Length: 399
Ligand SMILES: Cc1cc2nc3c(=O)[nH]c(=O)nc-3n(C[C@H](O)[C@H](O)[C@H](O)COP(=O)(O)OP(=O)(O)OC[C@H]3O[C@@H](n4cnc5c(N)ncnc54)[C@H](O)[C@@H]3O)c2cc1C
Image 1: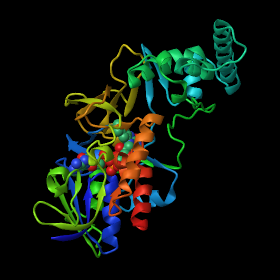
Image 2: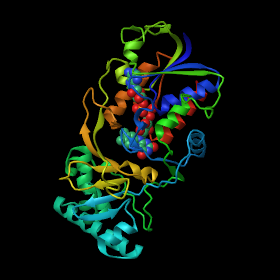
Image 3: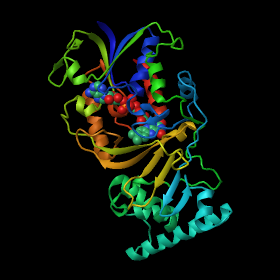
């Protein structure tokens, strides 16, 4: 069959792009190597709970057009992310706000909190300057940076262990630029995000993506002039006829389909056979436990564990994203992990070295005007979901 586009990846980027092209009357084929659509925002319904299989996903944005767009495909609840941090037997609200400070120092007013933070941070800066015999303060590593911003208590209890687990290195060995600011609020407000709109799609993210891809069978599906065909469990590298590392032109699949253009949302370095080198990522490992006998395990969707001795960074209790009241619960422990070939590439490592390598791949891609690269892997960017939608809408309008 002849298609206008082959879209590689049925994640959010691929799904939005496919939808927009079908709106224009184009016929598109979407393939994904996984056995399901929705990429990393995939939710699987078990025990009546939508389990966020590839990590907790909270939708938040200040982009009104994007918010209106997603609301066409799902109804969002009024979930507000308000994580809790556990340090030893102490419990604190996040992000750092008056609830956190009041618990930590038994104080009540913003003035008291600011005085303590300034005093502690000042003491640390003075100590570091003295140790280095210098009049200037220039943080040599992440530890010095965090101490100079927040003082000893917040650093020790809420920053140090968590950051060390995330990066797999001591804070004294991490560069200071990782923490440019430590956002603090001097109001009693546990809302983690500053964005205007926030929520979780009721019924899960998979249903939202299925609707974008016109996969549902009911009459709620939008009727578009073009078509979207979806095939899961299909790897691009087995599917497309190749000439060396890149697709032979005109583009064809091994089973005789043909395409005018390709949108690729997998890893750009893999696409080019790692010709210029390998882009690096941080990975994660998830351990999920079904607890049919427990109705409410931790009383909150997200609980961070900030001491280094506990190997996971957080526990997610999925039912609380949708205010689940039913019997049983499901929790996931999230462990940061080094990334190697074959592991799931979760977070791009956007340091100078990797960004330069990515820019070289972008130059290489210019030789292929009929192949587009999109999404967090194709564009090697840490994109939140709203940014992915914005980028996919913009690309669909331009191409
Ligand atoms: C742990 C974690 C938590 C997050 N939490 C949030 C959050 O709370 N809020 C938020 O806004 N954002 C969050 N994000 C970001 C969000 O996941 C991304 O913005 C979004 O999923 C990116 O969509 P995408 O389509 O670019 O990529 P993906 O979802 O990765 O989709 C790419 C797809 O391409 C497929 N693919 C790759 N290679 C091939 C191939 N060779 N052949 C066929 N198919 C292929 C993959 O299988 C995948 O399905 C989080 C990310 C992570 C990692």
